[in-house]
Image (cartoon, rainbow, N blue to C red; front, top):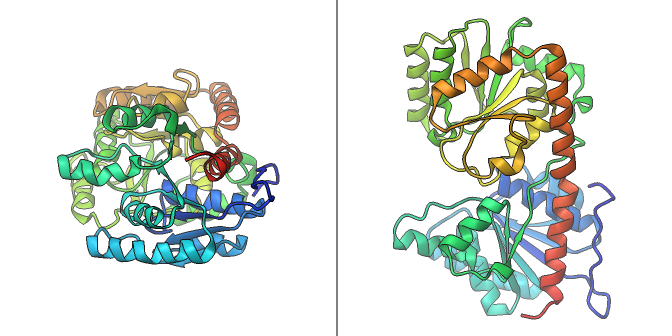
Length: 392
């Protein structure tokens, strides 16, 4: 963690608060990434911090930073498991002297809220998505995220969603945009051997532009729309990489494969599984696409691509207008519109070297100025301080 992340913590005796974050697991995802980043930032300031989850590869980062991890089945939605987890979390809060409990997802939030109610710990949440409201039962399930004394919204779009759908005082909400690690997502940080290794792994030809759509394989991410747009583009001299795990959605993967075959795009479109070196993936790309059909709560991929100096094409839905400068760092298209997407692809692929350089400079400056991991952590730590020592 950058040493610039600083927090003045402590009560009148100078004792810093103990913070417990709860997430379902630590495998992948925005909530998980934010949890780990903030936990490491807390540890760097000397604040005792804990994370409870079902575990996963990201726990190694916590271990390296000296952050305590408690393994619980917090990824379960079973009511009995949620109740048992609440008992265990209450024990942890009492034993460890936890003062702030921060929930980042609904199932663990119910356990955390029950535990905080029993122990008197301060409870807060982060809204990482505009959760599907569904019927009254689903709305009730979602409502735990609105029970926090403080609620972090990861965009103004999410803030509006909360106020429109839940009985929450505007004063309880803090908008904190997600930040990225510019020590990772910067062109100068990606070495040539990493690029060569990934290009060989994906068998990329040297002389073809690369269109990149990062994101797990799920219908709302718009992979089908991009395939249809490529068919309309009518170019066989490009490569399109759809980078992301299907997370068990085998039928959707099969549907994508059928659509690719239908348009005879087998030599163009490649479904690539999870990539552990996304910075190198962005560097190999010519243009990055986010074709989401449903609102993005923030859109980390869009920010990462801009930080790497890449032109991006994004659908005009969700928080996109908070993360790009239309016409300068990104082209905006309507969702579910392959014709508009094909037109924007043709334009982005036609950029001259000078135009590409100008876009890169604007995009990198925008991402660096507004979406820094250090800034996100600093603002989150300030919420902890205010909550721990402020009035109830």
